Length: 366
View 1 (tube, one colour):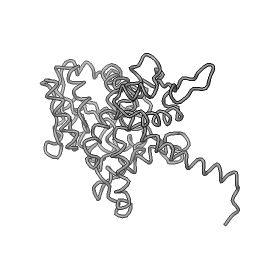
View 2 (cartoon, rainbow, N blue to C red):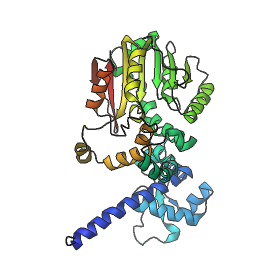
View 3 (tube, one colour):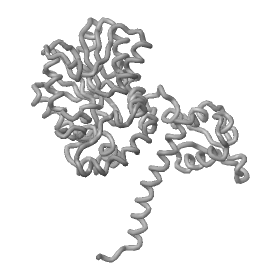
């Protein structure tokens, strides 16, 4: 065995335990969201002591204090320091900057980031199932994460979608807004809890919208929200019961962050082509990815997170049948997506100029 460099050993040990710190702090983020601690801090007009924060949330001060110490030392919440004397336990005060409040406490802000932390217990619980998956090759679909998994997906993607889909993304598609205003048939494949369907149905009352998903938890939530919306131009369906039409009758098909999760993405692409009119459009939204691991590892600082989430969720879903394709979170690069779309019968592929931290947007046409 080669000699161990003491300095390199210390640095590697620090690197390893920094990963553990991130995991433990992520659990604290989940608690902060679940217990309303972030929202209480955001509502306060001045920095809060832990006694004040505990009182406002109905929680025990000692637990709140230790949570604040974790969050402040991780630089996720801010703390005030005394200009003259060191603070004592009784007068430590904590607050959220405007940027921290947007990400941690404002459900409607496009940068809101609590969705993945909402479903963190379900995601991490998947670890207990992984040894068998590694041995058999068979993964688990999204419903294995339970109803809170579906809610987490909803909270992850809808804030940005609500702020940008109608005003930014759809206008980037050639002629689509006019078609929607005049009335056309639309399908959202992998619709989840139905947020995009309901948003578009409200904005374009002359068009009709169908959301398709195989998650029973997501469809239950979508049906509930549809009833509350009282919209008459939208509905939801399980494609295994009511499949996409194959008569080229749709003007628009959308897929948001779901093709890479599918067991049979190539087959789905062919189904989308068969559903679309010859002048129709497929809006493909999926995770930004490079063509090779080396590029992902060197160009994307979030690559470790993406590959890890893939094992616990995305690739697991894509391998949840014995013949699953297993694309995984970073498996649908622009080059891969274009080749698969052309193999499915599409002839035009264009990346849209839409700014998003994680996703790429493509206009695909017959």
